[in-house]
Amino acid sequence: MTRAAVAVAVALVLVAACGSDPDYLTTEQLMDPTACMDCHPDHYREWSGSMHAYAADDPVFLAMNARGQQDTNGELGDFCVKCHAPMAVRLGLTTDGLNLDDVPQYAKGVTCFFCHSVAEVTDDHNNPLVLASDEVLRAGITNPVASPAHRLGYSELLDVSSPASSAMCGACHDVVTPAGVHLEQTFAEWKETIFASDDPRQHLSCGRCHMVERTDVAAEVEGVDVPLRDLDIHEHTFASTDSALIEWPEREAQAEARRLARSNSILPRICVTPLGGGRLDYRLDNIGAGHMLPSGVAHDRRLWAELHVYDADGNELWSTGVVPDDEDPPTGDPDLWELREFAFDDEGNPVKYFWEVREIVPSLLAPAVTLDPIDPRFDHSTTRSWSVAGIFPQIARVTAALHQRALPYEILDDLGLDFELETDTMAELEWTSQLADLAGCVNP
Image (tube, rainbow, N blue to C red):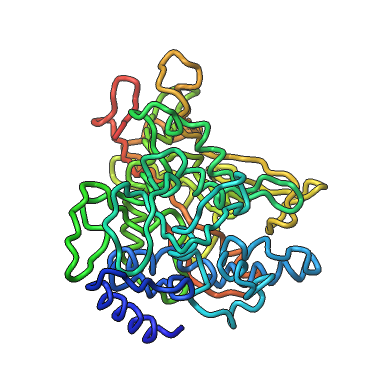
């Protein structure tokens, strides 16, 4: 169905709403996200720029899936596309994702209809979600106002205040490869944190962080008295780490949402002490993320520390982690602090692609798992130390920051793609002797 046809259908439905028997949209019409646009303009706009909408148009996904199908002689099958375009798979429009250019746009990405039709979660990885066939679009609102466009229902799977909602998110955001490697573990990681606690004072679902709450109406329908819902409406930006590499809607809004998502994630500390003749410590405490950092495809993420040491005249004495915008963090630099998962094959050789991975060696920032200060797991921070013995007496100022990219240039180059990767920065902090405490440390 074309956008114009959907708009006409929605208009007819709204007219019909004045009668006693609404003429609901058909299942085929509801599958098209543009059918949601008139009644849910903000949600549609936010979703249109999200990585959910982008999932099947992402050139990295398309190229990597094609490479995977080639390298495995097609054995990869629908492994990738069943998460990146689940409706296309369920409608029989693709079996391996190699023909997505010919699949209509309404069936690409993770769509409104897909999420709001989920009726059951049967496992914890690789998209085991069961969709209902009753034309009811579910949400987390317990007292919905009757819609002129579709049937409504409440589901705890879409209620961000319910622990069940995280199970729905986790079902796609935990991935086990065909070789049995638990490659993406965001949901498994969350389940070990304080945020998965049954205590409502601690519990935070995936949606509470990645779908920011606001006071708003759930729908905008002319002639229908729609109540204002206090902190019961949620953004549909799903902001995290990734960003669109091609022209895509809502680019600035997505960048701001990513900034907000990471703004309170990490608590840094810098210490300059005389230990060993002079030592520089950079401590990172993952206080806000409900999972490891980085998470998801952590073997593709690039997260690294950049530090600079200056004397009183502003001369640079030492630095590490200075990475040009068009290059990856250098391998083999003993001073570089890089946080990610390192992937290897059966023989211990480094590999790039998930279908080659047989072993993962993590170097990640752990999340909070307890609030009990006497529990040995309470301090979950990670500290990297560097010897600065040769320059210690001259140190007057230190700057530190943590940079993150969604993937490395080596992957783009190997796939024959030419894009500029965005770099996000967090955990910025400056040390001076005037700011330092008696232990030689500076906290935010």
